[in-house]
Image 1 (cartoon, rainbow, N blue to C red):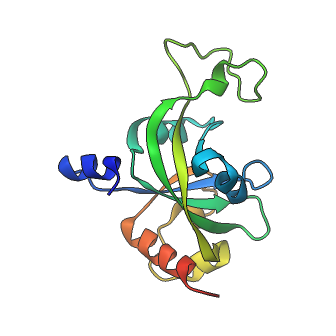
Image 2 (image 1 turned 30 degrees about the vertical axis):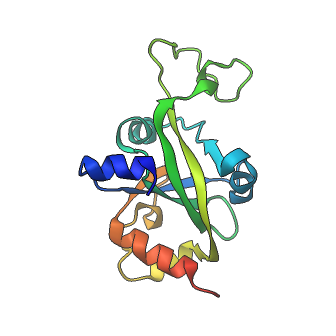
Image 3 (image 1 turned 60 degrees about the vertical axis):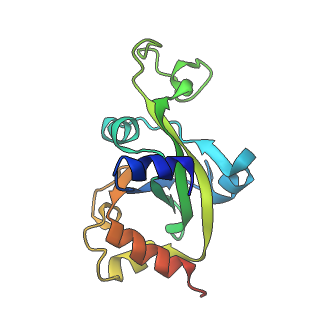
Length: 170
């Protein structure tokens, strides 16, 4: 058991689950696996609802479904684990970054991110059409029309179903 898991268990805080969307040409699962320690700071989120989740709700040891959006096909390619909870996104202060925010201040940061580590690549990526057809996943935000949030909560039941599908051989 990781230290984060032990702390949550001792505090009787349940593990939560999330879906993180990433465009594979910007940052893919392969990029995450190739990163030092297979970890990255999830930066560049510029939506207040997603920011609030990153800052206030997502904690160490939470599970992440890594979803390739704006891809053909759109798929969940694997799972990751949050290894560091919300902290200010440094790109908001970097004038050279496309995520620079001149209105964000160091003593009052506007944007946050978390650090995730690759856990396992799915043997069978789970596509958006399969998500839509699978009983028990009807309430997932990712399958609803107009739900474009890049960070989304996932129920424990949906997590189990999706991980089960992804870890089976094709």
